[in-house]
Image (cartoon, rainbow, N blue to C red; front, side, top):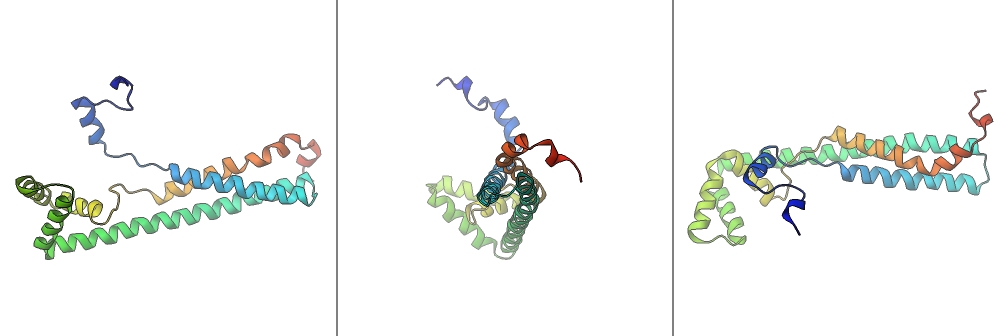
Length: 191
């Protein structure tokens, strides 16, 4: 494959620019969760109403109620779950900050063992430990990812909830589209 067709450049300038901005926070999983749940639950409502041979108007009312109620529920649950992840990250970070302050030799040994397990030995291992532990911020971030497996980026609970809600509404509307398109004008008239 021609390297010019890769997803991003690999010359030193391109690499420096990409790394300067840090990793991109993705809300794709929030979209997928909301989209799948929206489609499935709305389809279940449509199937139940159609199976009971209720009117198109009833189907659309129940479908809309499902979209907003269940969409809000999914968004609220995702907000709470993401907020809990953020709070857990902060709690573990504070613990690591305390450990680095109160037991620095033990924390240096943890770094040593982590990088030894990655294949560092001798002078290279000593150098890696010295470089990582020379800056408190880098040291703590390394412990967060290497010891605890926590990602270095923090997602926004609000954005995660919004993405879930929007996906739920948009994807969940799909099973209703044939009924919206085929609904007679009398259904839309206000009474």
